[in-house]
Length: 367
Length: 124
Image (tube, rainbow over all chains, first blue to last red; front, top):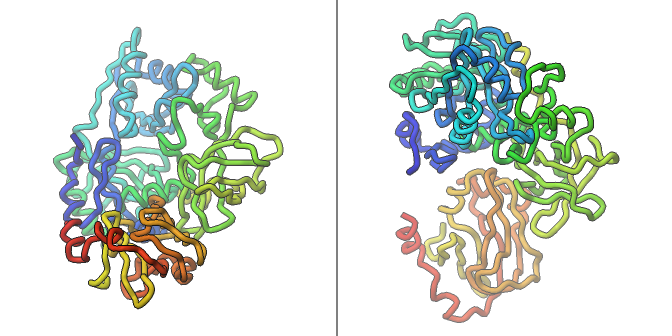
């Protein structure tokens, strides 16, 4: 049975093309993926991401518990601050990638992928033995609206929230007299916020944001553009670029692994070893040197030897070329600037290894 | 779309034009694909049998193979679309055929093709 968000009927009324995604019936596009993409890069877009999972972890041992299940050091997290991290298995493989928010002392909010929420909860419950901690799945009570793009700040300020939370911070706030949590996070590489609201207010909030956002050029954005936006920003998609056979080091996420964390955590030995010696594979960015498009699953060749596979690929509406994320064997002679080949419909096509992200991110400097 | 076109259930069409046939994808297929960003067409002179993949059209989301509605030999390809795939999405642009073919297909090959009006009923 496919699930629907509380905004489902809104999407249908807006004429969205609907698809099944991670067990949810979701809008993939309202008008055109490329137009929606450009709206987010130049003005502001609103996304229904209510399929995402929300889990509250609280209790006396919530900090040591979280420190056991993710490589990040949660003890460094101050109130109302968020951190990007991964739920790792005993081998350091990634069960899911998460954002953990510290709401208050001994109370944390986890935002998880819709496709992984069941695995996450199972894994957390298996790991809670010996910890005085409560794990509550709140996903069915909350809707999540992402408002992303350079006009986000102006729009939110026009609603009476003069001071937005800082990058990767969250704050309790009121929008149109509705209690919400606003966090300065997103999945587009643009400045933006994600607004957590109880389901019963989500339709009203969606309508009011679109109504008020009109003067800033707001448009609803589907999962299609969400994917092209995150790819340009080289943000990982679970199931494509991350899975249980891939460690955070291999995924290019070493920046999210503190080397000096004291607590033991799942997969620590493998992860620390890989931080020293490198992983079995590494994530690279590619741009196609012709007009072909690399897609998930296409093989990568170098000197006629298969060296890897594309995990996410597509068009870059902003750059105007075609880009991809791929895993390759760590070979010494391959670096940014090297040319490799991608097998597309039985023919090899040249691609160049390029720096990630593919476009400049414009979220971090915002206050 | 030309009302005289015959359509496949996989959303290609074939339209008789004198001694040649025009082959393309239906307006419904274009709408379903969304933003079209890449078109690969075969070489002039190559031959394909009915139901064989002869072209690839990629939207932002995915790559789709396009199949021959009837057997034939490619006599012309629409270079304009290869250079500017987005023209397929342009409602004011009319030349949306992909290839022109010569064909000696017999009645059997036409038997499972749908009149445009039947095709429209089929997709609704």
